[in-house]
Image (cartoon, rainbow, N blue to C red; front, side):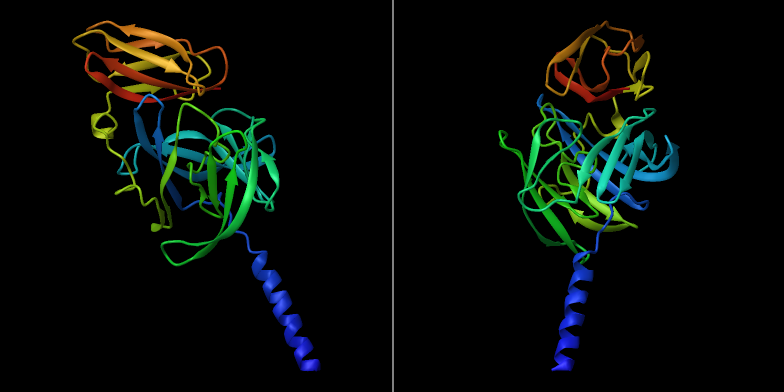
Length: 288
């Protein structure tokens, strides 16, 4: 009987130890790819990684880097991210503010609020999933009451909406999807709806990029540069995450560089560049 009691204690504590394993998201050596699908019908894919420490308000973050280059070069500083217990906090580049974009301290039936938003997220259920390399990870299934929208999180991998898009369910203007996740050059997750870990649409191939905005993010004026001077006038629209057009520009023929003041309020603004044949380029501008 004593031996049976010892075995039961061992199984209990072994099971409890296993249940307490937590797989962090914020680590170096990881790369995510995300496809941004705008309501306008345009879109682009980008890669994200965390690399290099930075200290802000006494808190240590990893720097966030992004690129649309499929060779994984020409990275742009995009912000900072940290993990505290079961919470993940992200801040825009050159800003000391931060947003809670994940919290894994949840149980089925719990309601959480992310990204300083009043949109509720309900954890419907949890489970386990097997990554491409055979690892088993906890998975969390969320829904947003009032929206026909669901979101799935995998521990150590992130949201199916994209690594920085936890809590994005219910937002408008962009319908992002995670495509791939690699860790130490090992592919561990791949969205079965995509053939590759990136999407080339012709206008979004980095070898054929039509436009560049800099600095981006910005708190002051920014410059728009077209790689080729347009033969005919072009239209450029900036719109917010609600899909409302904030500014419309007419770019005259023969002009390929000009400077603008950003919108007065902070946030993320999407843009699209068009001529008579349709959309030539699209992307986003971050104002902090």
